[in-house]
Length: 121
Image (cartoon, rainbow, N blue to C red; front, top):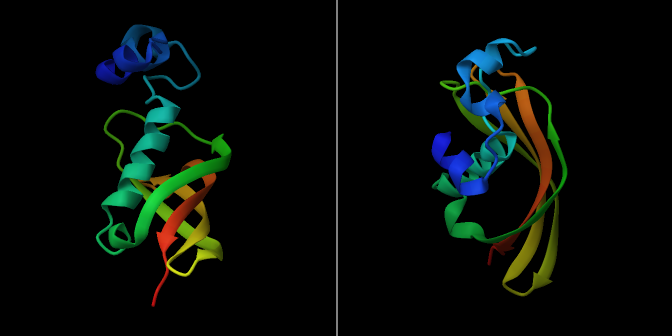
């Protein structure tokens, strides 16, 4: 998390200082929410079944940080496809609801994502 803080300039002690974070409502340090979001995009891209079909990430709407992720937590992404719209004979836009869940199944981050994808032939 220190490298992410250095890279982004977000050095909020809630993410970096155990003593400070212990005095907050979370009781301990939390992971930067935007780092969790970025990791979720990476998890989607790393899925062997999806990777060959994704051409690019077009954007996100309704990004929400519902619950904290703590150092050491494990996350996974649940994707629900909402719509697929053709753009050309070989590509389309896939819109999906994305939920990042921790190891206990608690939603930590949610958003709607749009991807440019290859169309099936």
